[in-house]
Structure formats: C-alpha cells, structure tokens
Length: 181
Figure 1 (cartoon, rainbow, N blue to C red):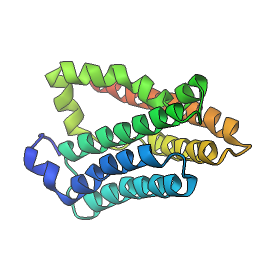
Figure 2: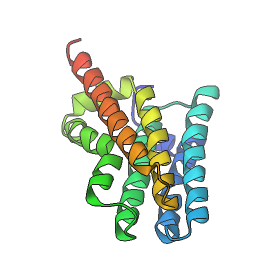
Figure 3: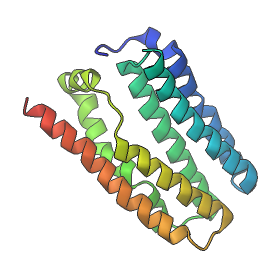
C-alpha cells in the first residue's frame, strides 16, 4: 500500500468514502425527522462497508484511501454528535460515550500528523481495526436509540463507550508495537 498519492483520492473506494461528508451535512438537517435521519445513518454505514469491500475486491486499497476512510468516518460521527447535542437528543455524558473512540484516538492522530516517519509506518499497515468496526455498529445502534427515544439507549451508549475504549486501545497497541520493530 505504501505511499500517499493524490490520485488515490479519486479511486472508487475513496469516492465512496467521500460520500459520507454530504451525508453528514444532510444528517445535520434531518435529526428531527427520525426516519430520514436513520436512512442517512444507514447510507453512511453502507458507504463504510462498500468502500472497504471494493478496495479489497478490486485491489484498490491504498494508504490515501485508508486516511480518507478514517477522516470521513470521524467527520460523520462528529457531525452526528454535535447535531444530537444541538437538538437536545443527547446530553454531554451521552455525547462523550458516543465519541469515546474518537477522543481516545485523537492524540494518536496528532502524533501521526506531527511525525512523518510514523505516518509512513502507518501507510505501510493501514488495516482496519475490527474492534473499531464493531464500535461503529454500537455507535450507530446508540444513535438509533437516541433518534427514536428508545428505552434501550443507555445500554447502547454504554456499549458504544466500552467498544470505543477497546478500539482506541487497539490502535494505540498497534502503534506502540510498530515502534518496537
């Protein structure tokens, strides 16, 4: 996978990932229409599955694509959290539970941004974090509960926070292990 290349930002998997940005903007305007908001959430989840599947299936997995995928994931989730707060659908504690993974990974992202050698090492191994994918499922379940005011939303918020901690820990663990080699 290796190098970051601008042309890789225009490959099909990257273009599918980029779709999460307009979906995020649409979600911001749809939070008070639960069916529409849930449809946008499902569309975002679909883009997240399709981009990775396509990249692996057609050998278009690139370091650039991995960065775009991660960035659009974070941008979508940040928009969702801010929108839910602005529409009084989640309190600060619930928002922190939803954003646990992102908050746990943020220092690592800053570290990668400041250290070119670490960015290159990351480019050599941009594999998805399976626990991170599971965390996304729990986050989306929690958002579904918040949008529909379901009785089970506290459980999914707690599960989202737990999985977020595990996902961030896995990324940190991989980074620390790669520094030993």
